Length: 142
Image: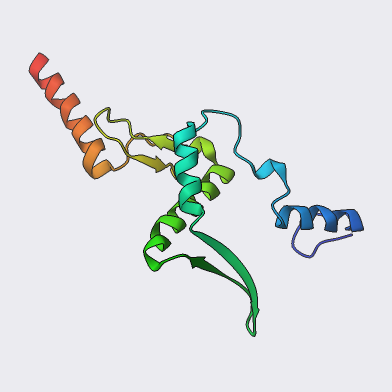
């Protein structure tokens, strides 16, 4: 079958629909985090404890399908959304979640750089300090 937008594609079969349905229902194992450093048990327990305070619901509105978040109390919403986003990032690109290169910094970040070589949580903070320290060390030797 020819596609109007690109190269020829194959005709869809009923089996394709079941794969799409499995993916939509979370049954696609390729979406799980890739092997690598695994979070410790305490971290898993903490994230799951936050997620236990809410859920995402799906509903149909006149404009079309929509989702909404229900939480036990409004104060849980920011933490629940952060935990949900963290799981989404783990599923999409776990290799892009990194610890800041500054040994004194405790922050982690999601590397969105084109070549994946970002080193610091913030160039204005940790990155600038590291560059200033290297510059000072070079000047001191000279």
